[in-house]
Image 1 (cartoon, helix red, strand yellow):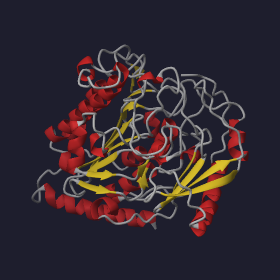
Image 2 (cartoon, rainbow, N blue to C red):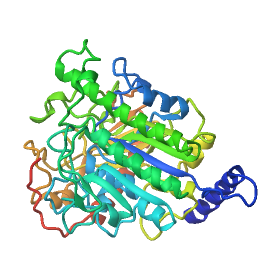
Image 3 (spheres, one colour):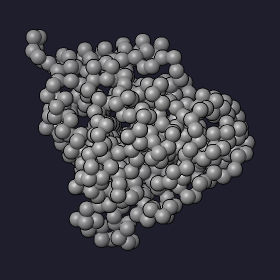
Length: 485
């Protein structure tokens, strides 16, 4: 059913675009829309002026919001990077893909080659595909584990995890399987250089494209141009000013990307999605987080937490002529919806024979309709930093679940350890709280006793989903996840 509807809507869109292409007999480009997905790293819901930040300057993202739609209830797939990215690419809850936590270099954990990504689907449908930036879905770009090209990206310019030694003059980029060596410049600008250079070639060739740009900013280790740091003399200290400047530098890079789409004449037929992989880092959580002054705005919690501040992320979609300019939607959506949405807009079938947790947002973006969601958005993060380990969101309500397992903080920054897989499978959710996010966006008042029917219905659904994901995500990999950052 999903596949048939996907193809039907996609064909209709393609036909409409073909009418715009020119008279019969003219050499028109492929009428299908192209896609640019831009993912920031640890950018908080409250870090952009378009989402209420009073201090940080981000004029290019302001412009993107003015030309597109702000999604104010858009959720990452997890409160931490690697699982969240796995959910975006596959349309599946990250645990199903066996990516349970962030992946340090040298880890056995990776996104399996058996997973079907949106890039692979589009490549097989004739799209040019590329990845630029932070990959973070395997233990290394020099290993036998699946690489970005194994997951559908014809070209990649990436780091396995963070830019080293910082955002300035990184030395650990790999281009199409070959180490690049030391580079001069700033990570976000180097990533943009590669992305726009690739765009020049594919647009000239007339191919529709899928480009994923995964910036390292504003994740630590932060390094920012001094002239941007100087824009914030009122910051409480130089470290906070460096964070603000890092967001501004990210904005400058996005501006260059948008400008190239304009210069190449493809902005009108390109869907641009800008988002963040999770909420902002907690200041001082680890030794390197001294510049982490990100904001979740009015939301409770930050990165690694299943409160809203850890998973609700600033998101904008632009598609001129299709997505209303200057609009805003508070409908519930998230990373797992990206694959089904892109499939519908491109006129291709979503994968069959596997569970997809997302749905297409095509109607929501173009006509304001409610997504036809069978499964509510839900999360299961066994190593949440205090608080609940699972959550589910439906309409105005969010239910969170606490488990009977221990705290698993791993404060030395190591990721999964021996025994964690068994803990994930064995622990049970035993206590729950219900929040009305319309009346209480800060998640301060448990309303389970006011809405016992909603609380019980969501509790049963969440318990079943967590059990299902824990069973599907069982891993046979060696538990050698002891590397540190």
